[in-house]
Amino acid sequence: MTEREVRVRFAPSPTGPLHIGGVRTALYNYLLARKLGGKMLLRIEDTDQNRFVPGAEEYILEALAWCGIVIDEGVGVGGPHAPYKQSERKPMYKQYADQLLADGHAYYAFDTPEELDAMRARLQAAKVPNPQYNSITRTQMRNSLTLPEDEVKGLLDSGMPYVIRLKVPRKEEVRFQDLIRGWVVVHSSAIDDKVLMKSDGMPTYHLANIVDDHLMEISHVIRGEEWLPSAPLHVLLYRYLGWEKTMPQFAHLPLLLKPDGTGKLSKRDGDRLGFPVFPLEWRGIDAETGEPTLSRGYREDGYLPEALVNFLAFLGWNPGSQQEIFSMDELIQAFSIERVSKSPAKFDQNKVKWFNEHYLRAKPNAELAPYLLKALEEQNILCSPARAEQIVSVMKERVSFPQDFWQEAQYFFQAPGSYDEAVVSKKWNPQVSAALAAYADALPGTSEMTAEDLKARFSQTMEAQGLKTGQVLQLLRVAVTGRAAGPDLFETLAILGPTEVAARLRVAITTLG
Ligand code: GLU
Image 1 (tube, rainbow, N blue to C red):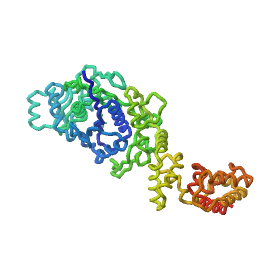
Image 2 (image 1 turned 30 degrees about the vertical axis):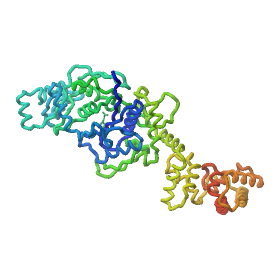
Image 3 (image 1 turned 90 degrees about the vertical axis):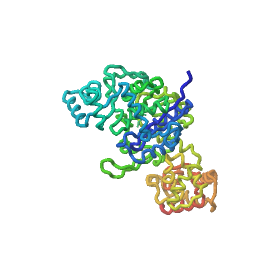
Image 4 (image 1 turned 180 degrees about the horizontal axis):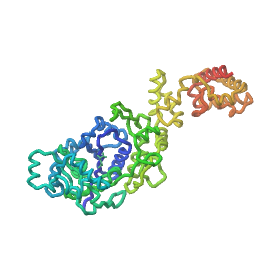
């Protein structure tokens, strides 16, 4: 038997911005496809028109592209199974519902919303814990299993609205092997007769999903744990449609939990704790108030896509070694479904920041300088790219996000307006003041001097003043930058240049006495 081609799909519904849990699902699909030399598909599951949100589809495409998740086939790319958007595939599904009807695995149901409500109320009154339309209750309802054949025909001919439901067997064990969870066994009495086709002729998620996965020759379905309860129903559909032999392998990913592990990670947790749960910023409309809403995104908050991807890869998977830093290519090499955990993964905002710091520091200065230059431009401050590169090179060990460069590096462009109170009140004295004045006098009136020379000159001057450099170093920093801490001091002074350093020292001495 020839090995089956690996074909995986990410199949989001465009109901709003893509949650980072969805990004993780897309990532794991992508890693597996690349690892096994297969294809990654993107299908948009928009059969539920009531939940459609404008802009969501574009958002999904942009978010995946930003993360470096490349789609081989699907929405935005095309391919042999186009269209890949379910609403555009609407005419394809009916024949499969008809096949199920003809084979006795599905039936017409004519119940009105009132009749369905009455059924639920009846069952609730009888203390049935989870009232459902199923193998027991269907015998009491108005459907093609209970009504005489000619009446059914009459109703259909008269244009009476109907849905098509799956006829779930009453007593049967449905089992399948999940690649992450092992054998999953569910008794059919726990499965309800799900609607497959709605009264407007639109398939539901369940039918469309199975038909498309089959037609698109999907080999592995990798998706979130919230779909695990639907999987037995999907297995039944594959069986009844005669597709069991080529049924994809299932892998249900572990849940993403709040940082404290008390429940599923939601947007509200992000808002409360100050981190985004979406890859990109999202401008939406509040469903209740109709007011415009703004949700933060990793991209706009200054995270690098490499950092988010590396972080998400570890939320539910580990390489089995101590290595934590993985590029996309390294993830592809290392990834395997066997190492995906079935226990839920806790979100850790410090960890994603840690990854960001790592990737920021690994970036060449020439790629970081534009962040600083952009902020400077907004402030109308002139700076050459070469100087911006020098500044980011000394600052990058100290920042977590690109937008911090300006915040942290302001003193390279503006003399300090104040001096760190705590250090000044504790350590500033006339002897220090005199020593710093001597250093200012010892600096040449040129714009350039190396860090080593500035340091050597400082040591000589302090020695002549009878002071140890350690006694004055921090005050030198405070006098020149206003701050008690920062990057390498003499590198900082070298970037400022001896003339500027001397001028700032004189101002500090006058101000602080
Ligand atoms: N449309 C479903 C979703 O929004 C896809 C579930 C699946 O992958 O089967 O997550």
